[in-house]
Length: 137
Image (cartoon, rainbow, N blue to C red; front, side, top):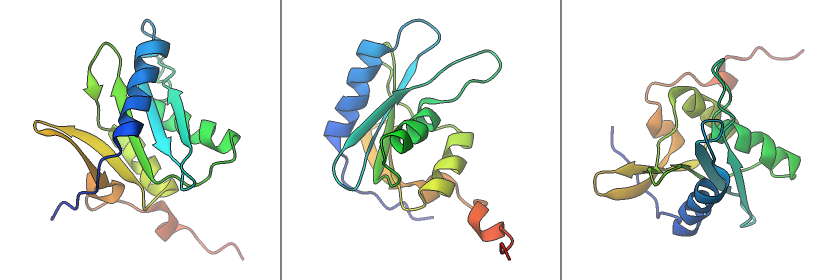
């Protein structure tokens, strides 16, 4: 698989890092996410950790964006609290992000810094939910 990279939206990374620094406190909120809408708006969110499996910051962000009337996202990034930097989405988030926003770019951390890649490349040989839905007739 050839990895296709896109320019990194550093303002988006900083927006998520700012939320991680200022809003993540204790064990309930340890990750922040930020996404850019096609109109340039940035939406942010934090995770809601719970021992029963609370939602990740990326999933909270999807709901937060919808509540603000944002139904398309161009780029997304997650940043950990306590200076952990950019953290790639978990498998569940990768699948949900692919299903909701198949053209989304995700900023991930590497040993050489950060890069932005299409969400589909984070989930090779992926199951595409929309491809398996029966016609609603």
